[in-house]
Image 1: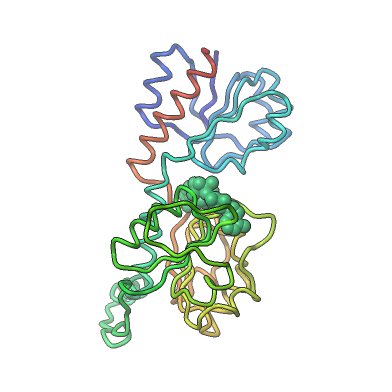
Image 2 (image 1 turned 120 degrees about the vertical axis):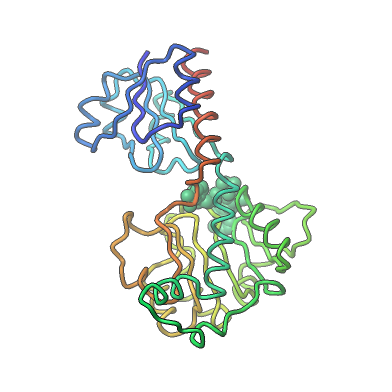
Length: 298
Ligand SMILES: NC(=O)c1ccc[n+]([C@@H]2O[C@H](COP(=O)([O-])OP(=O)(O)OC[C@H]3O[C@@H](n4cnc5c(N)ncnc54)[C@H](O)[C@@H]3O)[C@@H](O)[C@H]2O)c1
């Protein structure tokens, strides 16, 4: 029984596999190589760096499972895998808190010009006046689109710092939290900050039309998936001042080459590290290893 660990696994996760007698290789392959080596494995574990498209699944004649350490499984052709009876495992909740905290980090960073202040101070400048018009988050309205695992944690954290939270979801929202459930239109028109927590969408949820409906100077946070906010429209709105700032962890293409966007002075950017904390990786590693053992040995 052999497993390919394509994008790494925490030491605790490796220990669980070893104790269960599951042999594994830790090696990242580009697509062509992956197609060549995959017949030698009964399982493949990926994070976000490796894609598992149909060609890999077809080549993996001995595959008994595909595992993703993390939440989203959009880098795996999971529908095709399931149609062949190959289970696709993931860890939907293990990194939610880490992502939610990064959202808060971007909120604070944008409200107080932290990215730009860092850059200019390192250049030897003391631009105290330029950064004197920061705003407090307390009392501001945060619009949350997608009230799932991450959206709910962001809501709790935001309430904790004194923000008012308005929520929109396509499904009925049931919660004891002190929030307002609103239409998308109301959320756009009344939020000072908008944070997106929906799955990958076939087309951008927020483009030129939606940005134009928002309050002037709105701040947009996207730590969900890159295609959810149209980058061209976002850049235009940053340039016009319609959007006051954007906190981005995910991009239409990764690694992104949209330097006009990420170098914009009103952008706080991270390279898709929402889930990348020591705690989340440990949790992900243990949880996915346990699921692999249960599936392969069960
Ligand atoms: N930045 C990162 O590293 C990172 C890490 C983990 C997850 N994510 C992403 O965060 C997002 C949210 O993850 P989650 O675990 O909270 O997901 P979840 O499935 O728990 O919640 C998603 C919510 O979005 C709602 N939704 C779906 N389509 C919608 C739409 N068009 N409008 C409004 N609501 C809609 C769903 O009903 C659901 O309540 C996903 O895109 C996920 O891939 C990013």
